[in-house]
Length: 569
Image (cartoon, rainbow, N blue to C red; front, side, top):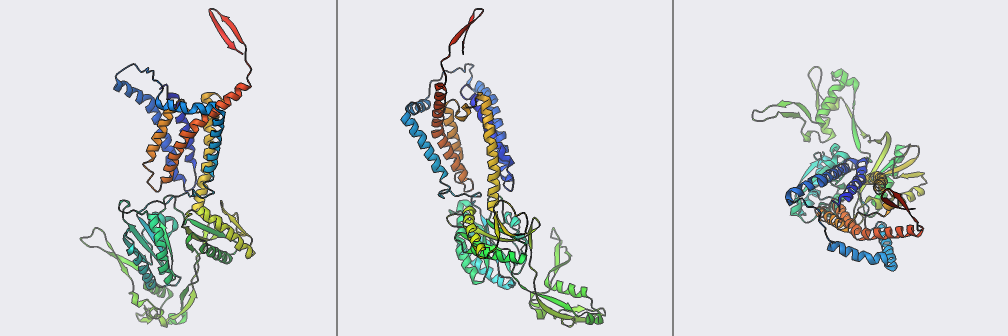
């Protein structure tokens, strides 16, 4: 208790002050990180109670002695630490060399990011047991052609040893999943769309991670898709907050047609940039449509109204539930669905042969009641916060699988292209444009989550430093000592570092938390070997400087009864 009691209280308060502000991180990352500071703060508080209440009580019960005043000699670890530190503190050459080494190591660690030895990425790739292949055929493609292309693409999966089975969904979406809820895959209902749900062996039965499998699938599947003019995306299950796509460019402006043209140019730049894959946009190409024009005069004379004609055509083109059928051996009723066979509705000529019952009971062909006109289907217009927007999406692959580096390259190319087109164009990285009076774009996707997280985390850690400084100042009653303070003995510090390193080995092989484990282990080693040496040196230099400016003070003897007090002025 004498050795680690006060440091334990101080360390507990410092840790709580350090991690609790993380609970106020906003955005999509907030719900993911909030349990960490709340749970860890509670755990630190209860562990402090255990250290001061349960541990002494257990010691009394288990050791069976009341004599706890051990005169422990200096341990080998502390002796080794003292032997190492003495020349560093007393020898100016070694001391200065050590300080220079620390500065160089600090600069080297900071340079890891610009040198790209450490990539900046918010969401690491996880090792999941599934992925989706999203297939978009050209607008106007028939369901049969989409099915043919999907089956050809899916056949390539049979050669992958990790794939145990897959399901194809043609003209409709795959079942709801974590990814599809945000990317709106579950809304996909058209003859030119398809999904392939791919399931892998369990993690223990395969050596490759799911991201490596997905990366290896992209090239062969794209080759097959190109034969049919299809656009495919390899959609992995996100390890954290789901986003529309890793790279998202939101294009805004006063004229939607011009927005679409600018978005197409940005899409072309995406496709021409190395490391940018699965490029797509929310631009719907003009596709043919048909409109049945009723001959009102003829229909009235025959006794057929527009509602009957509309119901007949809707029944021919879309299934309709007309009732429920109950089986005695089934727990639930079965829906009875009425729909004309596909062979009878696969062409305009066959649709016009459909019969409509007139008011006198006579069956009249649709071809006698009007004509079919070819037209263009209406295009969807997307909005974000009430602003019309065109989305251009993509993923990143290759050596730099982080959106940050791709955005840095793309921003330059987009700016150059807009200058060639003589368009006043602004690129926003952190917020939406205030209005659509001018053409602009905003970078979204994984980058936006990264920005929100580190922005809120930076503010939180600024508050953390202030809180820790206040705690240490109030404890030691000094404004300079907290800048160089350390706990009291080297042994508990070494044991704490060893505990963190051993505990982190549990998650070092997990792809999601591997970076966190490496950071914890390396940070503990660095703090143990460097800060435990740097803090005493800086403390020594600070105290020596203070003594240099302090004059010797005379001593005064003050008698009070039989006591003599010696005061130094």
